[in-house]
Image (cartoon, rainbow, N blue to C red; front, side, top):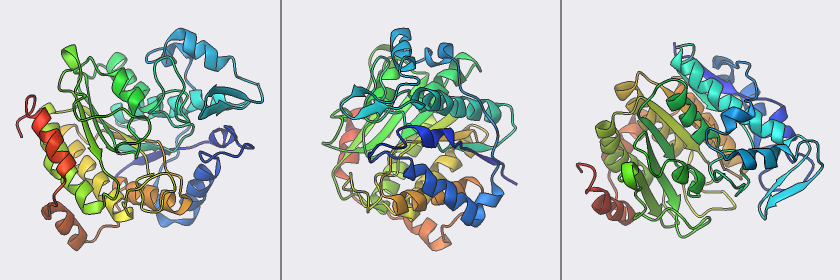
Length: 347
């Protein structure tokens, strides 16, 4: 029996709870309610976890920036960025979100769970080492990877980001190291403007950043092609010891911020590819951290699809798996990326 943990807390609802914002507490409320109503919710574990201390946050963020965010604690409203604000409990929620990611890594490492999903907010992948950005305060997925490397001795972490928006903060966190292979699919051109296929890393990290900037309108089969024909062969060469996912659901076909056309079936299949790679390459070690997703029904659909795969109760039919596994569709942006990264990987 697969042991899948969900890391959730009412404190995550308190971040900007009474302020009108598209990244609202309603995003988690609808998911938390779905876990009570859907059968999959009864098959999951809900471990306790604690906020991290500032020294852990400084694994990926400058001390002055951590102090700046900490100084917002208890204040009704502070604007850190045109898109990113805090309320009285935001610092505590953000520190707990990182705590969820770190706890997930530790529990997977210790064999207490097979995999985990951090259903947290604020999200993280836009947060730079010294700057809040794009609704994000601290970079949850990046800090999970930092913890795995610094505290647990991992040397190769695959960090996949399928959010609609490019994870600029995550890319910049690991741009000069081979300890993390960052693989991102994202709509382009779009916020935040980074993530060109030519951005492949520097120094020891050259070749370990792989961007697939996609035009609007990309649907399930095209994403499956990218994951099957580009991500999977590179992952098998990299041989990660841990796989972390920045799981954004704003590529859903109904999302108000995006122009993609992914359905629950697509999210389930992409999750399956990652889980199969984790089983093949790193004893199943897999952790997901919630990023975007702003259509509440689409968000719920995508997360339940992901969790169902993780817990071993797939919603995919055999026909859907066969179709998405074997039916490659032309993805010109992937071919552009492939030509660039052939310098580093056998494709």
